[in-house]
Image (cartoon, rainbow, N blue to C red; front, top):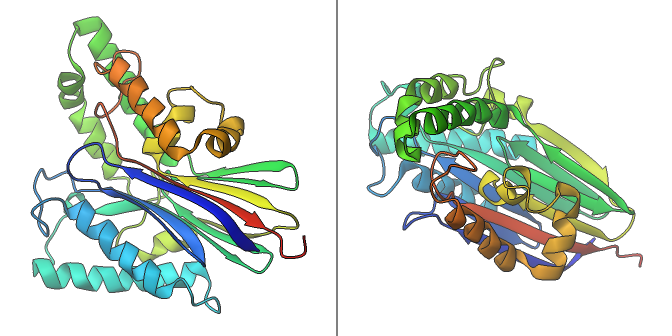
Length: 285
């Protein structure tokens, strides 16, 4: 397969963007970082999550071309590399689980007529190939988040509290959910636990015709799976015709119109939004 078109976006919700979207000739990746819930940064003055995803971005750039090694092995080795850098920098191994940064990740790599993918967390992969659409996503994080949003919604509508006030009220539930990180009872995500690699969504798909691919962080995919502006089945079509930048602008308009979070309860008004769109041409065509 040859890449003949690509588009990417990583739109931060604030001065500090904890997402990354990147692409090279071997594949593409999206990272959606999460800082620990301790309310402070231990490793970077701006954001531990920003440091974390940048470490992974550099690692993937250096190792993506090793096509004789599968993505699971590359990620597993990467966890040890980034973990070692982290603990050397903080010089403290008595850090609690809630303090540690983590990230959702979506990796896609194409070699000849095969697409290899690896997903941890709540990133989305959409594949259009041979007139068929395949959506690959783990909804474990989404289910936990929805319980929080439902509780926030009830508080906001019954007690008239703001989005931030409601979030503070449900903080215990947020913490409880985070403690389920990388457990069978909760969700699996990119952190410092190599067991998560074996719980990832992973596979290889033969692409027997031209293909269109989209990977997105949950902040971007919210335009379809939270705000319902576009059906998931139409997201690739809309991306192809309007471009990621245009869709992201619409996403921000929706969030601005509901800045109170009254219609769509969420953790904050805007989330970092990142995506990569790729069109591949079958070499035989």
